[in-house]
Length: 370
Ligand code: NAD
Image 1 (spheres, rainbow, N blue to C red):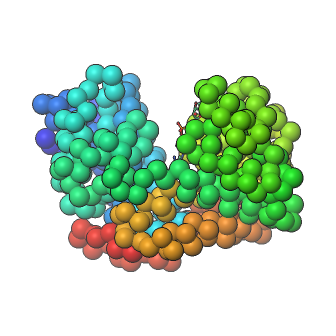
Image 2: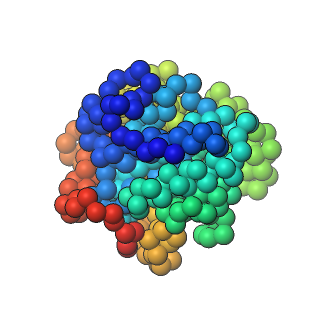
Image 3: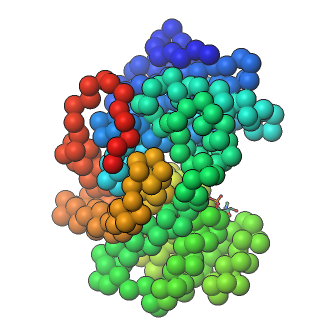
């Protein structure tokens, strides 16, 4: 297995890796290959000033190495902002494994990934992401201790993510309607999977009316049955007349193609990278829609993971999770005061927190301390 950074092992014909790293202040990008298992992976470490870089492992059949590198760079930077804004003692990192999940020896692949993570000496801690499961992390754990999200530990983070989204919705309601009360409000939930299901449960419990969609009919039926949700087609959920539209399925759903047909006062959901393009935040702003930036709204899962990887108590997890309300309120406050989109304010708040809490990076491996 080889770990390399630099132009002699570049990304297969794309733009220079070091130039791309410096464009967004990435600290390190490491490329790994294990011919025996067929493992090919990239670990991007964006920033470790607040602690070791934390971020999941994405397994995807990327068409090109360049596409894999782009994903790793973009996602690791997003993790820096998510962790800084959430107040957790971690930096931002992400790994991508280039593989076709139908044709891999998962134990061998994830052991190889574990050796790759271990070689970084604790600068990077991994967990699950799209295409990987807690079971895969068991194989990573055989090679390194720098891994969370195992099946034997704290379990599914989705209820915590849903609770954080609820707090984000409440902050947005205060901003828009002057009250956090969910009773009588209508929320359209796009995607009734792990997070969407729990969000529907919590909002229903708080007295909200739920409209929901899922391309998987069983999942939609379940929220209809259990929480009285009205089910609509996946193509029309974003244009439902509601107080809140909550994207909980996929990223990139807010774009010039969809924003004009939104009929909500607030967008607040769990999906990562909801804006197709950064500029779409301004488009929402111009339509008078309050957007709760995704990386703040959906930080509950990351906060929950701190029990396992930072030794946090349940009380500390709960109070930090509840604090999503205050962070989101600060985002809307800054956006109003400066006349900027909330998406920009969120990045600014994350950068401010990073600068305020940052200690000089000595280059030495960092421990995950609370
Ligand atoms: P999931 O796969 O369990 O649920 C997604 C659901 O969306 C599925 O039920 C799927 O059938 C449905 N879906 C797919 N396409 C759809 C469409 N076009 N219209 C309506 N429904 C559609 O995923 P999840 O864990 O619930 O995560 C949801 C989103 O939140 C993802 O973007 C994820 O990255 C993000 N997120 C999740 C967590 C977490 O703790 N699970 C944390 C942070 C962010």
